[in-house]
Length: 94
Picture 1: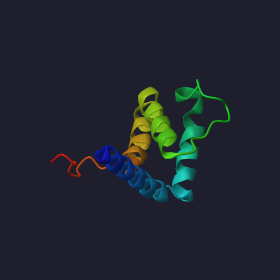
Picture 2 (picture 1 turned 30 degrees about the vertical axis):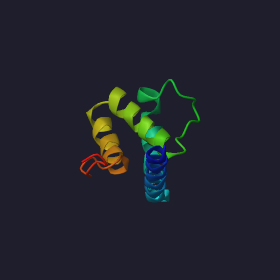
Picture 3 (picture 1 turned 90 degrees about the horizontal axis):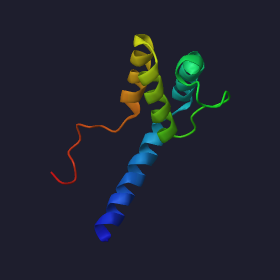
């Protein structure tokens, strides 16, 4: 039980530190990418959709990578890699 609380607390702290990294310039870049690829990659979302939090941003970038062309994959991948959790960090179990 205590372990679960610590894990939840750790995830909350990590998420808040990631959200601090989503500044206005980054949001502008994501929104521009959404506008550019809305018709090709995001046709199933509302016409006025823009992601609002980290989870939405990562999901939207994944859609653009999945349904777009090579250039879309590259552009969304750069942002996705910058925002996604660092996989090189040691795990709590190691």
